[in-house]
Length: 100
Image 1 (cartoon, one colour):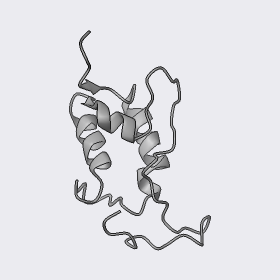
Image 2 (cartoon, helix red, strand yellow):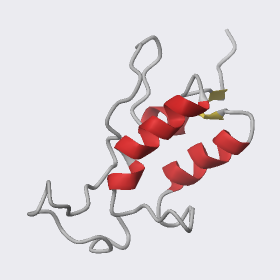
Image 3 (cartoon, rainbow, N blue to C red):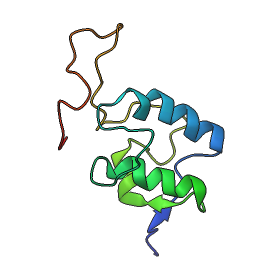
Image 4 (spheres, rainbow, N blue to C red):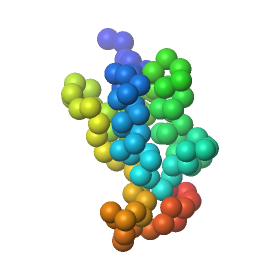
């Protein structure tokens, strides 16, 4: 049996954008002006897939919380570190975890 090396975690660009809004845009590791793999390799990989063929390594799909056979439109990223907002005032400020 052949093992898949890549998979497509999102069915559409809209699903990717909604997932990114739910996760990346609320995470201390995200910078909308700099998709740096040193800050977040997940954001870099899925962003590259978005402008490419939509495929990411299976490991990346698993790390973002994608599970084969589950039909969820968006889900929480297990590696997201929520940034402090009015809704979450007790969280650390953005940049508090430079290597997170």
